[in-house]
Image (cartoon, rainbow, N blue to C red; front, side, top):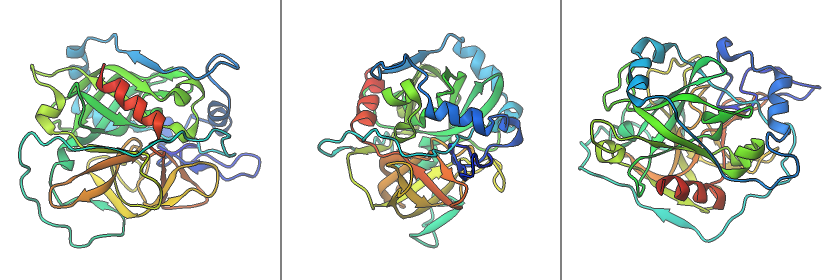
Length: 343
């Protein structure tokens, strides 16, 4: 999830940040220099204005369900990002706040309340509720290797939209392939099915130059067995342009040590604004690689497991351990969501 993805050595004396933490050695071939180039150099046409982008899957959907076996999902390496080493000059466009309510196709079963409330630096989610169905693992092929992130099903007009991190759909100029969303993932099992993407998208800034401030991606998943995603698992709400310094809950499936990707992990606490190289939110959290793309919620209700998604796990700084950063959901994230839900 992070941007140097945690674990990449410092470059020119600058400690590298961890993208929702350093990925395993299998993805450790993202060298520090190569990662920084991917972060700092545009992948689009020089001087061109950022244009919205998306990738349509050409892989047969039935093939993807068979491709992602339990063993392949367990073995998928967590994807990490290189962390930023200088502040982006781009401001995050903002406008009036916008909230989208969660979709609850059925009343969730009551779950045991957590023994404690804010803050939580990282631990298994035992509270039940809708979040255990809407949050899932994302699997894809990146540079010829099978990798994983996290994602979240959200309320949408097409009932088929998943929000994740930008680097979980596209990295180093290439769109990932074999992309599927597995809501409610349980140690190799897919209790609510494997949902192949018919289209993956990212903010214009991520598409053009992989700007860490705009590390937001989305996927439109195809119907499965004649049903649409949020009719099966529900959909979380969203909040755009909602400000900084909020009480938030973050969720994901970290798969790098000390985690193994088998459980839904969460963190909670009051966020800060990144004082260093990004315009992101920061949260005390020990989640590692593989949690990238997992949702951050404001107004989260532990009883029902519902909230308003307002960021995703994106990256961390290696010199600032146990702190996760996630992009501000401004106008570009809102436009991405609207483009995805109308696709």
